[in-house]
Image 1: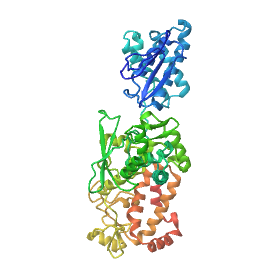
Image 2: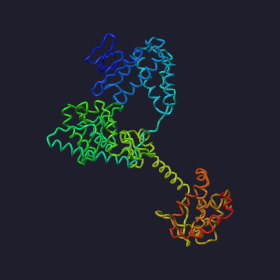
Image 3: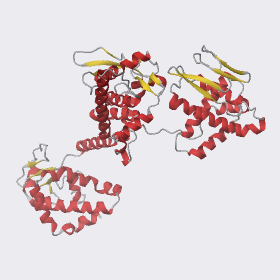
Length: 559
């Protein structure tokens, strides 16, 4: 067991209190320190104490301020629950045969498999509960085996090589909130911050000692995450002196500790200073409002105030913020806002942080170099860019890329006036017409049904040079020899109506494969070049005959 944890023995001979840190653990009762606050864990009600004792020792060795499990809620409490569940299951299976004296050496691989099967029967195979239970049990058994080598049998040691028999699952990264939800959260937080400032200042001006409560810390913390994008644990761990190095252009350094970083070294970001709606402005407000409590508590933490346990640095002592956070959300009606998919918003500090990162990603247009500050590109892409909230942006990027590739491979349609002057869609400068294209546009002698052909015997689709064009009439929509003028607009309008009718009759994939390109060339490359008045005239000319005006040969080809 790691040194630095105060332990209380609950042995058969009595209870002994040890004032100094020791490297030992009593049978079923132990104390772990979280943020200077002792947490007593009593497992004396469990059967098979010889089994519980080494597992409890393993849990104590990784928990507390110097362990890897540093938060009491929910991490540590969850692992205690996992330990209890396994110990209860093992006692029920082993107790009868061992008179309640079953120990670590009596654990078998079959016992672990049966415990996992029971979890699967209870939770199913799609969630994460089974993996979490088994990961805790396997880890504790490994640590117990390291502390007392040779106790576990070879089959059990082999079973400790993996946590669960379920296939590994990589869930989707936590999604961001819709941007209107993030804006509503930020506005509510900053409005409350101003109200808290006014209340505290008024009370102190009247001579009253005013300390903040956890409920009042919520909007300050939420607002800070909205303004900085800090991870919740980093924001909770800020110290009162976290701001430094002001610059003439209005920026300061915000120092924080990222406990999950491999080196656990301090980090910093440059943030804007100024009024309350800036990161440094909000931090300075929190420093000032909580300074009396900080001095009284003798702490350098940023978040210090009073609650039912007295004056303390809340997040240094494992304070759980879930209830005040949800109460604050209800008070502002944030829990009634619509989330992705139409459900109601459930406020989560992690999702607020993810939403801030999402906002930056959208503002940068998906450029990772502009977005990946504080992360490698791989981490930024996997955990912050590849989320459901960005699907529309990514789909648009793919569509834009395919359109650009198409424009390189397939020239834009050639559109002209009846006199042979080039036309283009709005915002584009059309290229001059070749002599052949000019002749085709100015004369109807080379008209086919949907266009005028500038080179019927110079078709890019012909197998042999000089052969006539072999494709159906609607192949003109993709042909560089085709020239489209106003006199072709009624036929094009009729053909477009036919495509829409087919859209209703066919499956989307089938329609897209057959008609998607033609529809795109019509709607994006040809129709925008003509005026509303020209389209209205074309609809009048094509409306009387409708689809029936399409040539029989063309209809036969299409259908």
